[in-house]
Image (cartoon, rainbow, N blue to C red; front, top):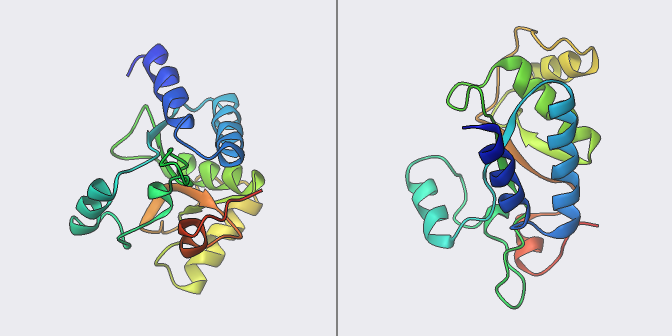
Length: 164
């Protein structure tokens, strides 16, 4: 994707997010860009039908998730994004995924880099991030480019709660 398209796509996807979450995601984008990466928000808000399709294909573990959040009036208020490396969207490198996780955590967010891993492998990721060992030989969880808020559950978001 050419740079102008990547930036326009990111702006479009940021507009699909709840404002405080969008601010944090934008911070992650800017920090990754400053590190020399070309992050692209592949998905932000997702319809229930699209979520069901993702679930049926094994790309999602829930029928309703943070991607599906809307406001009372139906406005898109997603609380999740999938942020790919635009230079390797189908096969992101470990350095990208580890730096994505690190920047997300600095912004008060979390990625799926640890999902599905046993405790010892999670500790290895934590150590790699803490020591900025971006090429560490760690195992990556099942949804490492997914970013979502902390301190809120899907059920709470569905009921109207939003992150500060």
